[in-house]
Length: 44
Length: 288
Image: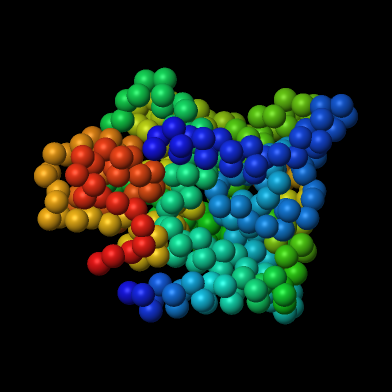
C-alpha cells in the first residue's frame, strides 16, 4: 500500500510541476475566472 | 473536536474569500466583476465558486471543466494541447492521496454552509444508497462527458457550473444579480433552473445533513475514490472496540462507521473519533 500511496503522491507532484512550468494556466483554464463566469452565476 | 473543526472551516471560508477590495469596488460601481489577482491561477481545496466577488482562488471542478472545454477546442482547431490540465490532475491526486475527503469535512466553505443550514432542524435522514451514487453520475456526465463532447466553439460549456452548481448560484449568482441590473436583465430559464436546484438543496438540508455532499458533489466523488488508500486515514482497532454504536450515531453522513470507516462517503469530520469511548477509531497515518 505504501508504494501505491507514495507512487500517486510522486506522480501528482510531477503533474503539478509540469502543468505549472509547461502549461499556460492563465489562458488555458483560468481566463474565464478573470472575466465573469456567466455560466457559474446562471446567466450564460 | 466539533468546535475546532468549525473554527477551521470558518478560517478557510474567510481565507478563500478575502478579496474585500473587490467587493467594495463592486458596491461602489454597481457593476459585477470578479477578483482578478494571480491567486486565480491556484485551485482551492473546496467547492468555492470563482465568480464569487470575494473569491481569491479557482474552484477545481470549474477549472477541470474549462480545461476539458479547452481540450475540445484545441482538437477542433488542430492546435497543440495545453499542459495546464496536468496541474489540475496533479491537484486532485495530491490532495486526494493526502487525506481523501478530509477537505470536504474541514475546508470546503459550501460544506460548512450546509452544516449551518441543517442546524435549524438538526434532522439527518439516511438517504437511499442509489441516490448517494448520484454524485458519480454527475461527475461522469456533467464534469467529464458533456464539457468534452458537447461543446460549442463560441461558448464555453462548463455544464456542471451552468446547470447545477448551487455554490455558484448562492455565492456568486445572488450577490452579483442583486448588485448589477444589467446582469439581472440577462436572466433566463437557466437562472430559474439554478435557483430551483438551490432551493431544492436548501429544503433537503433541513431533512438530511450535507445533502449535496451525499448525493451531488463531483469534488467529493473524486476525493472519495482516494478514501480507501489516502496516506492520512481513519484507523480502526477492532480488538478494543466495544460496539457501542456511538460513532455511527454521531456520523453526519449516516455511515455504519465500523463497517464503512474508509467508505467514499466519509468526509473525515472525525466526529466518530471524538465519540468513541475506547479510542478504537483514530485518525493518523494509514495502518492496515
